Length: 60
Image (tube, rainbow, N blue to C red):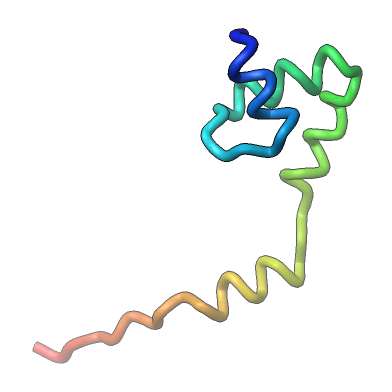
């Protein structure tokens, strides 16, 4: 990983790949916490589903 990428991650700049973040988390021993990112979130899922546009069926 380049020094520029690492500094960008440290400073919170957008643009770093998820792989770069994963590498940093692994080195820091925090990669197990990535499971929490993908954890089930019932409220978030409800809000996401509520914002989906309903498909209208057209009679033919």
